[in-house]
Image 1 (cartoon, rainbow, N blue to C red):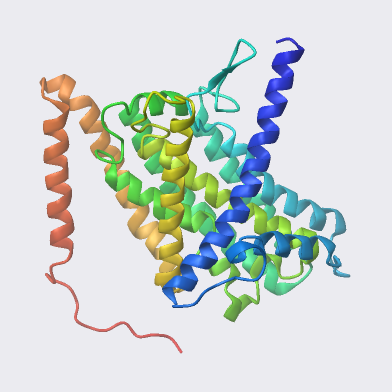
Image 2: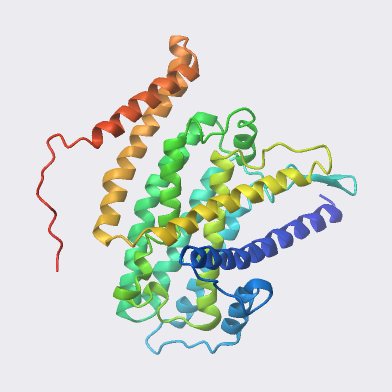
Length: 373
């Protein structure tokens, strides 16, 4: 690589970084507006046209707000934790293709920072690192409530990360690739959401739980833990936690679009061919984020014991069963000389019959669950 290649790489890194920052600003404004519409309110209207600059105003306020370090806190770990919580979302996004690329100065410029052969493993590694920022923040604060919030969040993230990994394994087995660009290329005819719809549902649920968003925001339950693991943070350090959570949400949506919804694929005219794939990618990510916002504005927060029971007793067994079904779908057509579509049809029928039977009150106890007081 010569100096121009390095310059173009640095320019792509800077553009993606600031693009994610701007997307977070717009996403928070979008979330406030959608929830306000659900509640028949106007939402933010003061800063900028229809309040579009309100998130920027909040960021400026937090930047100049005084940062306080508690007396009992471990200062170095206390200041390191927000950084560890913020950057995994940026690093995970670096492997996601968001377009076909373009040609500049006689060089092919891909709309992707790095095309790793082990892209899915890289994403799983980055989501695992995010746990450290949360648990270190709660431990280093020197207070009981942040420590309880950190323990809660760590248990929740680890539990749902297992089910998320199983959903990604199913896509990996079906597509036969670990690279995101290869997975997008394999969806030229049918998007993975059609044959892998159960894995898509599991991934969305786990993505909401991984990013501590409602109804799975038990790590920040205001009625129980004040604010959870970041109770003792203020100013710019609190803003870094806030930014990391929303960047991770955008990254989770982008990964879901890449793995299940065809990535940047979509119909496009011949005019500006490099622009339309990028616009399709943005549209799909926006729709997934809109779904996250609707879930937040609709469903109430679940109890913590039910949250953990749902992860370990429902999602993980279902993910294991779907991995076995996916293996059968991949292997059996070649062994029995069957069409893969036929196997998918029978698998869908069996799964639908199982779901229907699960709703029947056969052998189910009529005793109501006693709510602890």
